[in-house]
Image (cartoon, one colour):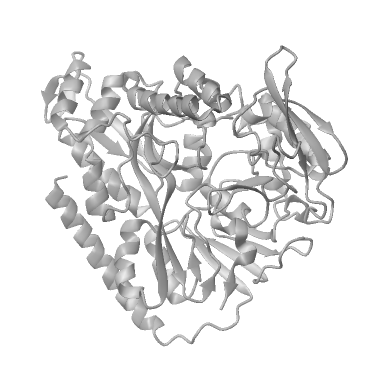
Length: 564
C-alpha cells in the first residue's frame, strides 16, 4: 500500500465516520440535559475472558476488576508508588525493609506490610494474612496457571505477625522491593477448597463458577451480574471502607466493533467510552471535529506498546534475518503520521521514551525496503515467482498475522502491513478472532503459527520478567503460566534482567537498562510498532476521571468519579 493509497483509505474512513456521526448528532441534539444519575454505563471494546485476577492477562479484565478490587500497592496517576491496601510502603527508614541472607548465603530482603484495618471482602469477611498465605501458596504451585509465577517463586516464606501484618522473605534484594501489586489477593475462605486440584483450578475457581459471589470482591463496587459477551453490572459495595462512590451501579457494556462505540455514546445507550479500551486515535480524531461541544478530548500518551509477537518455534521466524527484514519492510512512521496524525510514535523497543530508563541511543530499524530484500535474499528466500519469494525447495514465503477481530484500527494497520510486505515479496495472510478467543486461548496457549498483533501496557520502570525470561514460556507442563508468548529464550537477557532487579546504584543500574534495550533491538523477540496514546472522550458532566498512562487504570480511583 503506497502513501497515496493509505491516504485514500484514511479519507474513505473519515467520510464514513463523519457521515455516521453527523446523523447521530442530529438525532441526539434534542436530548434533554443530563439529570442526576445513579447508574453509569461504560462501553469497552472487549469482554473479559475470565475474572480470576491471577490467571491470564487481558486489559478488559483489569479495567473491570479495578472497580471491584484494590491492589496492595499501585503506581498513581503521577507515576508514584503508593499503598492502596496497606498502611504504609516498606522502607529501610521506617524499619519495614531489612536486608538479610538467604539460606544459601545470598542477598535477600525481609519486607513487612500491614493490611488496612478496616479492609474486608464484600461478604464482610476480614481481609487477613490468611488470604496472603493462600494466594502465595497457590501461586507457587507449578500447575496453578498463574501469570506472574516468578514473583511467587522468589518469595521463600511469609511470617505472620498478626491477622493484618506479615513479613515477606524474598530471595532477591530487588530495587523495587516496596511494590507488591503482583500479589493479587484471593479470598481463602472461598477459594481454598476450589484449589484442591491445582490443575483444574482455572475452571473450578469461584471467579468462573460463582462470579457474583460478594466474597470475591473488595473494592467500591462488587460484580452483581455477568452476561457473557454482553455486559457486566457492578453494584455499590456496602462493605467498602473508603469514600462512598457517587453511582449506585456501574454497567460495563462490551461492544467489540469499535466503530459502533461512538454511535452508542451519542445515542445515549452508553455514557462513557473507556479511555483505556475504547476508541483508537484514528477514530477519535474525526469524532472530535464534530462533537467537541459535547465532550472533552484528552489524548493520553502512555506505556502502551503495540507490537507483533512472532512464534520463535517457527523455523522461518527463528532466523533473525527474517525478523530484521520484516521490520525494515514496515513503514511505521507513515502509519503514525497518516493513520494517527503523529499521536502514536514509532517504537524502537518495548521501553517508552516517557520512562526514565529509556535509552535514546537504542539501535533503530529504519524503513528500508532495499535492506529488507537483501536480508531476505541472505536468509534463502531469493527466488521470485508471481511477485512472491520462494526458497530453493520451491516453498513460498507465506506468513499469517492475527489480531483482535472488530478492532478497525488494528485491521487497517494489518492491511497496510500486508501491502508493504508484498512490496518485498512476502505473502501475508490475515486471520482474526474475537478478543476473548484471541487472548484467552490463541495467544495464551501459543496456538498462533506465525505472528500476532496486540499491545502490552506496563508500569513505570517495569522489568519485563514475565514476557522475556526463558522460564516464562507458557507450556502444557506449567499449565500455560507465564507471558513469554514468542518463546524467547536467551541466557544473556536472563542475566541482565536478573541483575537489573538487584543492582540499584544509579550508574550501573542505568547501564543494565541500556544493555537490555540494546539486546532487545539486536535479538528482536517481537517486532515493535508504536507507542499508543489513549483517547479519553469525556462527557462534560463526568468529572474525576484521571488518565494514568500506565497499567493501573483510571477506575482504580472510581470513588472519585462524579456526575455534575
